[in-house]
Structure formats: structure tokens, C-alpha cells
Image (cartoon, rainbow, N blue to C red; front, side):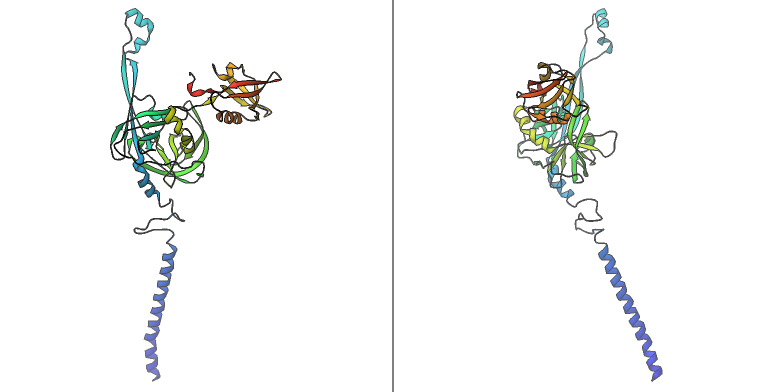
Length: 372
């Protein structure tokens, strides 16, 4: 009986051992599976914006919602040029008795824009339509319309176009560029290099950037690392609610991943002026300024010809201490104070010249109407 008991105990021991190993393997497998749930997403479930993911899940939904309101803008610009460079020489023309024979040079351009009203108002950049004799807008449905310029402002690099569609159009709404934070996700949609409705994604990398683009000086651009290429100009920069927080306007050619957009707050503040008056008023007094050594006022370094400042006799070397009762310590304070006025408004400056202080009455001018 003792020998038989030993024979029966061996298979029981093996069975128990195998069972324990199977249970251990199952437990380990379940633990590993649960630990991977925050790293991967399989099947039809959307990826969530959790640790391990590089983007939020609703970008594709935002694109589907907003892309129909993004348009392609194609332009034709005509200019007169002389056929023979020798005809530019007046002595050559006089000697041979030949007058310059002009010819028309035609150039084409391309950019982006977005629809802001169901009846066909479109926002874009000024430089997209600058000098254009013909403007054609292509919708996401491939329908094409001739567009006219309703309003444009070169200094802000903004323009509003109008088309006449057969029915109601999809539109985009403006969001708050003031509330968006550095690091927030943004989406750019446009037509870079003619590639229709290209989507790029990035974050806001800085706010309030002062940037010089050509002869324009911007003081408050959004900076983003979402790719912006030629053809993106005028297209929307969107937040994750599908709202426009900026108008894509430029890319830094010397850097990689640095693009700029005009904040929606700027666009919203001038949109009504553009569609009702065709332009935007730009108050100015016509002085170049620099900081004073003792931070007491700002120093006039130059005076623009035919400007309000020249009219009242301001001169280089003058120190402007006050603007309408506000004491000035930096050039930016004077710039901001002027921006808050209206053309035609009379303001009082306190100016120091050769140690003598005096008050000067200046009528604010409109930079957009001055001759350049």
C-alpha cells in the first residue's frame, strides 16, 4: 500500500505544478496588457491625448469640419515693360527717333483664404491679391468664382474678397487669439505650392512677436511651428475647436519650423472697416523715436515730410515727455498711445527743446492716406 501511494502522488504533483504555471502566465499576461493600454490604441477606437501620444485625437474631426470653408486664390498681375532695354536710354531714343514700345507682362500668383460669411465674404492676405487684375477663387467643391476686392490694408497685410455663390457657403468662426497659450495645438490649412487643402499641425511657439517682413513692421504676430509654405498665405490657423485664431502670413526663410500668423483679434478689430470703408485708418503723428538716456520721455530722431509733426514744427532732438497727459518713459508707450486715437483727433504733447518745456497741439493724421 505504501508503494502504491507514492505512485499516485507523482502525477498529482505534476498536475498541480502545471496548473500553477498556467495561472502565473495568465496573471503576468494580464498585467503586461494593462500596462500597455496608455501606449497604444488598436482597432477603431480613437487615440486619446494621454501620455505616450503626440497629438490630440480630434484633429481629423476639426479638419473635416473646417476644410470646406478654406479656398484657393489664384491671381493675374499685369505690368507694362519695355521690349528693348536700350530704349530705356533717352539719348538712344533721341538719336534714333524711337519711342519706347511697352508690352504687357503677365504674372500669376497663388494663395489661400477662408470664408467668413455664407454669402461669400473671404479673408486673405493683402500680399496675395496685391496688384491683381483678376482674382479667381476655387472652393473645396472645385467650383470657381471671380472675386472682387471689398477692402484691403497693406500695412496689416489683410484683405477681404467677395464672391457671388449660388447658395449658402460653409464658414469659419473667429476664436480668441488672446486666450490661446504658448504650447497649445494649432492646425494650418492651405494650398502650399498649389497642393490643395494641405493640413499641417503644430503648436503656438510664441505670442506677440515683432517681425519685419519687407517694408512692413508687425508688432504682434503669433509664432507657430506648424509648417507654413508659399501658398499657405491667407489661410486659417485653427485651434482645436475649429476656430480661426490667426491668418497665416509668413515663414522665416532662415529658420526651420518658424511661421507667423496675424492674430484673430487684429482681424476682428478691422473687419468691419474693411467691408464698409474699404480700408483701415492708421493714426500717426509722423516721428521716428528712440529711448532717452534717462528714461524721461522719448527722443525724436526724425520727422516725416508733410506729417502732422512737421506741420507743428517738431524737430529731431526734441524730447516728448507727455502725450495727452500721459507721461512717457519708452517709445512703445508713445506708439500705443497714438494707436488708441483716431485720425482728426487733436492731442496735446509736452515737448522739451534746448531745456525749455512747451505744449504743442497736434492733429492726428491717417497714415493710410499719406503719399509715399
